[in-house]
Image (cartoon, rainbow, N blue to C red):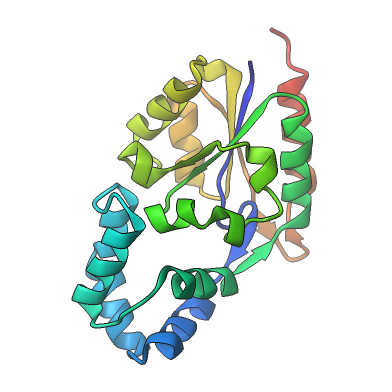
Length: 209
């Protein structure tokens, strides 16, 4: 069985934090500076991405305690979705990959992200069939070695039967270090190289065994 792992942000969906932060400030009445300096610069989002908060409720309670901003899951989703734009070519590639093997996310994100996939990623959620691996569940962030080995373990496949599509050179290198195939999605003057991604996906599917 081949497994096609896709990063989410800047791979399947373009992501702009500078759209998310103003909306969070508007929804909560807390300044962008306070939110960014307390939560993100304070390291709490990173902690959330490696599983510090096991439920969305725990995440939102910690967010309120740290920043003073009371936030519902619906508001969190609203701000997160405002920062995301589908990358059509990459999403088409994921759907094609789903006809060739198993597709899964492999994304550095906190628990509310996984709980919100039907809202945030309606274009891909059905194709994923519940394969929603995120760092908060796996207890490690890319490019740490253990996130790849744990992801492979979830599907019971050797690394040579898996490929990662990711925008980060470090994440791609981490996947290759454990023996996986990998492709870095780059953005050029004309947009994301989704044609290259599709070619890499097809080459992996058609490789010699």
